[in-house]
Amino acid sequence: MKFWNHLLASLVLTMLPAPLLACFCGNSLRFCQALPETGNADHVVFVGKVTQIYPKSWADMIEEFARTHRDLLESLRAQSANTSGRRLAGSPSADLTEWRKQIIEYFWGDTLTPTAREQLRTADQRELERLGFDQHHRVHLEVVENFAGAEAGEFTLYTAFDGSACGFDFAEGETYLVEAYRKVATGTWEVSSCSRTRLLAQATEDLEVLRAWKTGQRLPGRISGQIIELEGVIGPGEGRRSPPSGTPFRIRLLGGREILETTSDSRGQFTFENLDPGVYEVELGQVPALSRPADLTRAWCAMVTLSIRR
Image (cartoon, rainbow, N blue to C red; front, side, top):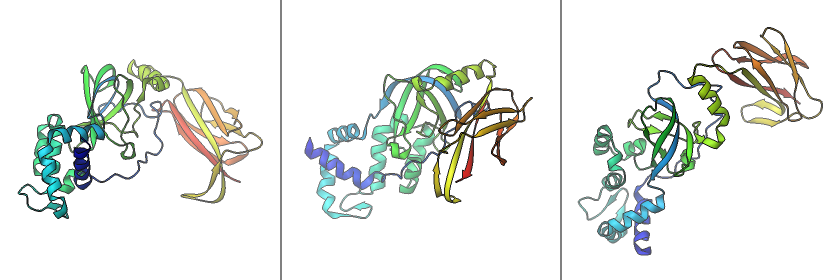
């Protein structure tokens, strides 16, 4: 088995896509900040229990392919000394793009839509990279609770193998709050680590918001904030950011039926709760010119950052 695994490893290194760059998501909005997109047929939000993940890992895939394609791997091993660029000498099926298509067909063939099959048939190497058929898990879930777009009892989605490529690490038997979008190029549903998908046990606040939204209720508004001290030149990627030290800051909230006040804690954080819908202005008491808007007309919560120079 080690012999075949060694051969397949050489094949995979040659023809499968190169590792993607690290995943950068930015700040993900909570559901109280951005509710589900009503009327968007390419967006779903639901609670689902994972019933199957395929293939479970690259290692499983390598082992299976080595077991079922020994003749192919032996042929490739014999030709490996003559490999040049993208083509393998001495074989009528030597185009590495075609070999890659065969692997895609073997592992993901039954998951491809008619449109995706046609795309696979005509794709060149660059197009294969864009489509990413061989860079993901297929995940089956039982729909436990639907919020938007997942009316059927089962749901199938895809996510990248690697967390560095923004893949989400699902586990069989676990239950998740899932947010997925339909990929235009393939028509398949995709989930990434940048989405608001998370284990159900970690989604208590989001579930409260979604259940209220689904039944037509509106929860009391909330504005949370953070005061940051900047040291040095202020600009993109410049200066050092840290929570303020010393005396707490006085914060005022304008725009409601009355002016509200609070003070920041030792980490520079503050919160205003039980707010009506509306547009508010968060003002730093010690620096009246420093303020930030917070819109609760459509959102149910907002987060503001007040930056001061040390």
